[in-house]
Length: 410
Image 1 (cartoon, rainbow, N blue to C red):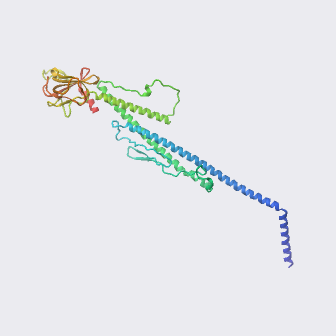
Image 2: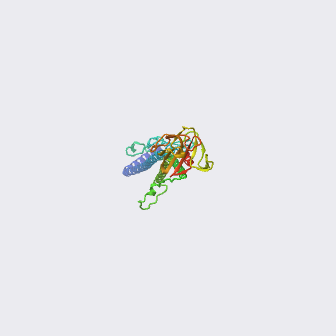
Image 3: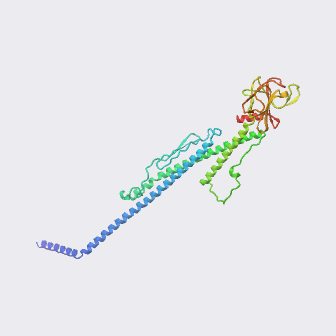
């Protein structure tokens, strides 16, 4: 009992001492707890502020990524529009006369690129492979706290690792944009290849027809590019980078000018050539019984000059004008018998002798292919045939020169 009483007495004393201390130091204890709570509150607020800073940093990165994506998209739209305009100019060059069969065939480009659209840019290459460029349909990137979007307070605070996922999700878009840019470059290279081939074809055809005209003994008029003819030009020298868009556009313009100049010159020379007697005066099969140059005279059997070509034919076979011109003779002409003479451009004239019948009169304007007379055996002739002459400024030249040129045009 003594031990029990002593224990109770000790416990009572300890309690009295603890209560006395608490009463004596109550304010200090409460202040310490307040300081501890304040410290915990500040640590939590610091953590929240850090998370908000990370969220704001993420928003900034997302905004930059979104703006960069939109800028790249606008650049691709501009590039695609430029390629469409370039393709339209290429198609304008590919007329029936200058078609390049079996070469690169660039299809028409369609526009309409937008953030959620699927613009199609088809191209057909030499081997027949088809390439289609498009944007996959995607939902717009949602930015935290962006004006007009979802407010930050409505979203749960993401963890640090999760906050980086939207940025990593943009990587496939960047890769896709790079792939599309590469494909647009392929289209540009294909169009450049097409333009180079068009220029080569037009230049070769212009050179060939110019050579034909020169072989006939005539000059061809050529024109220079406009930038070489302008003399009232000047300004400060500002070097331009060869790889810049302005330089590429200027190179295209120069190439278009050369191509159009080739086409214009070719067309003018072909028109010039078609006004020469390069068509045959007879149609169908024919046989030449005597050519141009020295021969033995069929009547006197001595050496003589034959100033034309003899086409054998039945009496009455039609004879046609080989080129447009004006009839300057239609009647009897000594040993030529019934004769027609037509004056063409460039001082060229043609004669048709030994006719059985004349279908035109002096002063008539004839077109190429018009019926002018019929084969006969009049004048100094041993049988039914057409004596055909070509003359330049009154001097007889070999008609075969014009006939060979006709093979090129017709």
